[in-house]
Image 1: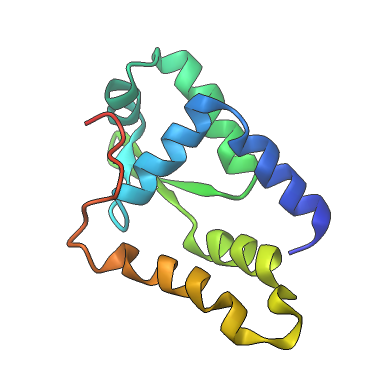
Image 2: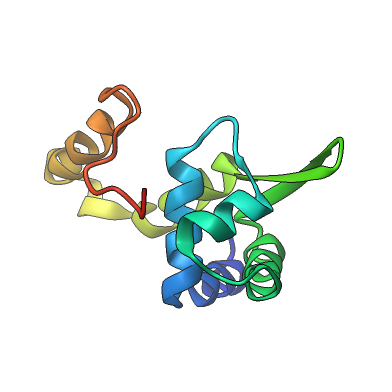
Length: 122
């Protein structure tokens, strides 16, 4: 990931509703959620939600697919991986033991049967 793309991603996430949308969609991986359900979860008007979803899509963080009459949004996990890699690319100055606590903190996120440490507007 280049710096310009990372800045675009951070700008997209630097707003409360969009950050909440992203975290909600992460919680619902791999199935994603329909746009209307996202709006209902976060109690955001549908037209406002469309704008937020468009910004996250342009930043490359989420993608949409049509399923019958619904548009299902989900996180592009490869973008999250690229962003994380960008942030820690030259971590620890060649001393991996320094980054071990960071890796350990990230590892259990997928081992808790789908429950996040901090729930988003259930």
